[in-house]
Image (cartoon, rainbow, N blue to C red; front, top):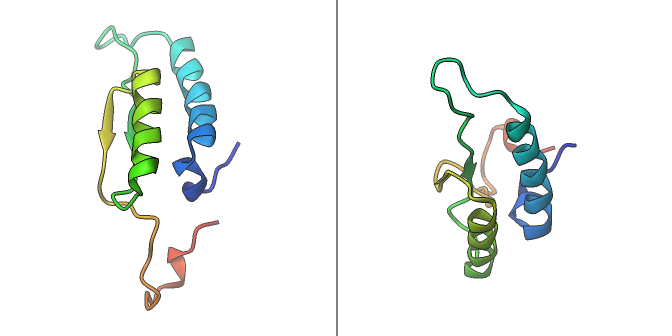
Length: 89
């Protein structure tokens, strides 16, 4: 299932996505090199509203996500961005 990035800032969509990712990870065999399964890292936009951050923090805590990246992504793009590649599908 493909999600637009902005929809993932919604708690229900994020929980649905993470549920599938967690199940897929749990089905994996531990690495033969590390004897562990892969860590799950969630990347979120730095310009979210406080209410969105609170919801996402709850999802992170509930799902025991291993780490969070809060940079190098945004939900707001400058209107004068000249490259046509910035649009999300």
